[in-house]
Length: 90
Image (cartoon, rainbow, N blue to C red):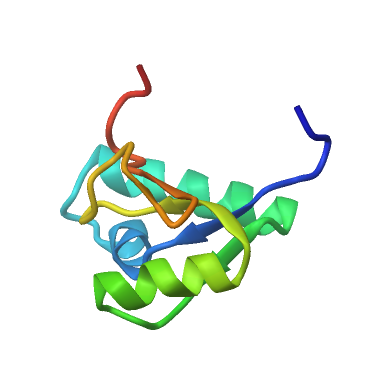
């Protein structure tokens, strides 16, 4: 395993969840994730809303993980693994 820190891409919908007071625990999870990535400096974001553009952006930025509610959690696209922050890790 490499000691190199992996960059992680956050889909814009996760940013929306972080500020939406009507989504309950999803808001807390989104806020914690964003805070963690901000503090570590490992987070990447884009204002792109189309899935293909988001995946391509994450790939171009060298991200290993893409946090998204809309894409299939666990799926790997061009070497970028999608994770849903609201699904319990197995």
